[in-house]
Image (cartoon, rainbow, N blue to C red; front, side):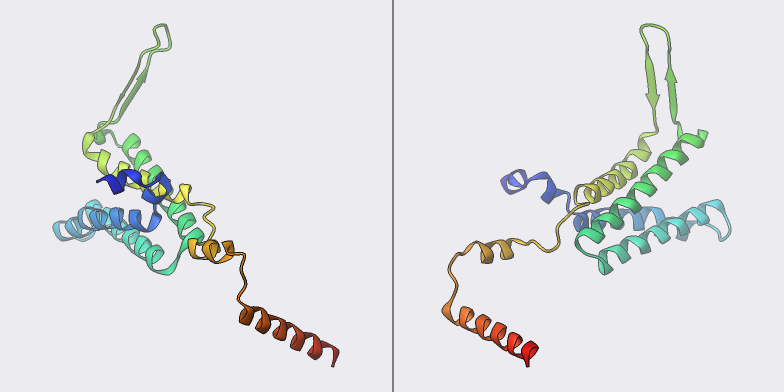
Length: 175
């Protein structure tokens, strides 16, 4: 447990981990179960196929991208789904979304939402946040590169081979 708390926020918001954390429950509860329980052509079936499409996109991002491109794809895709979920919740009166504001003092605000919708909102928000945190992730700098470059000593064989390569290159250009 101590190892978890010793990590920094950027490590905990690794987009690759969050893709897996979101994709598994999303696939089960938003795609597979609804597809098995609904009739072809119903609204429930259409929503489930959209859930399956999101799963394919998440798996594609997981498998075919890394580093900065993965973080940016995660941020854009997860943010779009998160905003879409919020919009659908706000538009559909069956979701129990309610927002009221009193514009006279004491300026009371009332906000309510169906708690059944909180887990998918939280998961997609965390996935989007993980992509945003790693938006400018530098792919070229790794801890191994830093350790190799931090050493000021140069091996004589390395120096000799580098000088020899450079000399050969100059001779080729001149000759």
